[in-house]
Length: 219
Image 1 (tube, rainbow, N blue to C red):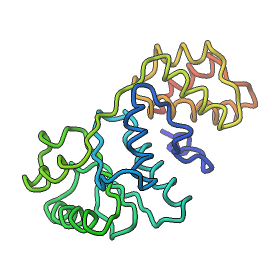
Image 2 (image 1 turned 45 degrees about the vertical axis):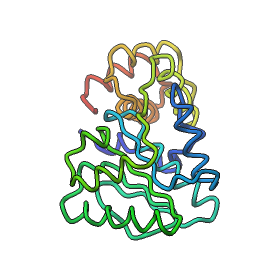
Image 3 (image 1 turned 60 degrees about the vertical axis):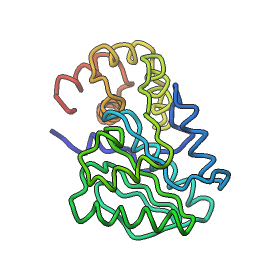
Image 4 (image 1 turned 90 degrees about the horizontal axis):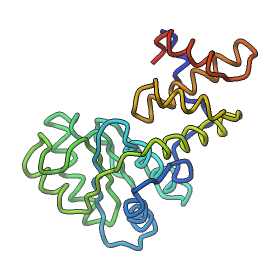
């Protein structure tokens, strides 16, 4: 497998603008309120299945905070030092020591006025974590990230293609949604691979090229 084909283009970064909202309007509003200091809630926990967009939203929050000249950091499976905005992804992957660090960080951020964003695949009550940490994560705002419909996934694919500089024909989108994996990150990875493959062959993206990408088991 040629891993380079699956790397997201270097000038692409998850933002609120390139997130397809779907049924997550209330969650987006809560995140914007927290980042603009319009909310008294200092901790938000978001959860959902793999590929639902949790990581995208946490990274978008960090980008938004940095653009507003706040110190902000995104971490996956570990607990970083204190910043104005801290986003901890994949909380269920934290070991015992990291869970204690997150518990302490939660208390510090709550007292100091920082913003702590945490994500996981389960609701707080169902997480296999220290009981005191589960309780803390359930104290703040909790949102489940709602998955996208096929129509919304098609919109996301078209936006991603535009960001990479090409127009995605409807027949390519339809074929990919029927024959690709269902989660959006995998679909976007296939699209990236298709773009790389078409550029290498000096041919426009097409269904036949997409079939070649899928048949080579690049994702």
